[in-house]
Length: 565
Image (cartoon, rainbow, N blue to C red):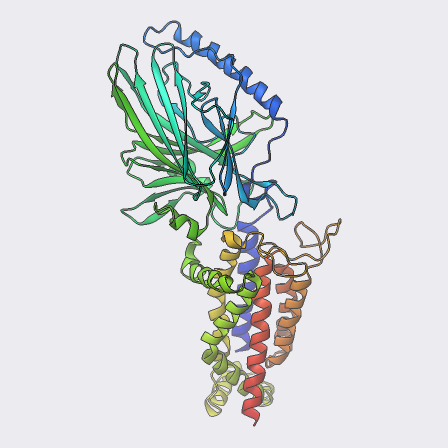
């Protein structure tokens, strides 16, 4: 029994330890792949206008020798920005490209600080913004650089109820007109975009529309999925592409319901009203606009090729989602976006646990308390199994002297020793494996909570009490300005983790001692090893382990004293 328990404990420890280093690694320089709030906006705008003019001249040069090429106008007009505020977000639309240049979530912060700014979903260093539309084939028209005119006089629009529509329009010198209508809603992170192409050139016009979005590529591996994803309703599953596999698996030539870019806690997605896409392509691109080499995950959504005769027009409708990966919020969109909330191979455990946490939270608005009550619920469900294990451990404790005698008597005959030990088990009706069952049951629950606490948006920056103000981050008491061995930043005293380790030590003292002195010492060392590993894990997971240890010790104490009566 002791050898099996030791093996399980060691395997569990190394799975956690190496799994952590593989999936988490060093933290990226930007939190949650968050975007840095725009600084020096004026210099950025000046640079944009300069590049627009340069690109315009270049387009004219390219078009000068091609009779059928369209010619883009020179754009000396300064870029204008239009701000749209709803109860949930503040969006900024640039007249250049009629693109989304900023999208701040009012209910989420960049960092877990009182004075932290709202979460910015559009990277301010990326030259082209996001959610921009362009023609796929070069025709002298560069919609990303085109300066659209808006139909509203005010540069600030508040959508506090109902909906608000804002239109942008651009026309080339040859007669190609592009109209973009945005529709924003007061009660949703979802907003609509209608793109209409009108041909007034006097000739036919053939092309494709391309909607592009992007996000910063993480600088290291993450716990939880980060990268491109598409959903096909016929298969009822989300296809998630690992960042390292984008070059090989990032192209789709089939019907999709939505596609997007996921970070751990947030989603940026395009939902077409039409299903006849000819291509959805994901790729990693490099952008040097800010003067620093940065890589982005880029997504292109192409329509089917279309041909417009003179005076004809064609419209394409899109729904855009930029917001949290909250199951409740995503289900309200009606487009199966909630499928993006996926906890991997432990999804079947993580989602019920999250549902229970949210259910408890409705009555007691504290996720730390929810974790404690969830742990208690798990202990109640597995109480019979735990009781059986405690009884087995108590019986094992009683026969330890007899086992010691057998080992001393047959120390030179291993086969005979094992045979006598098995006879001893049969005589006293002891099952050496029953004491390990709670550990085996706890492993999948442990990993289910492990993934959920890192990936559930509900637990991001969720406070518990005292110094534990973020259950998804490691617990740190005080802010120390020096490095601590085995600890990742921020540096501080992992008090909750130390208490958890102490509880494991006490629980170990209550279990029967191993007959082999070497094994006994190794088992007593396990709480130290687990404590070191846990100093970089979420405080919520540490809280779960601490409460689980306390309940386990209480159950063992209760069973032991019941048997002694």
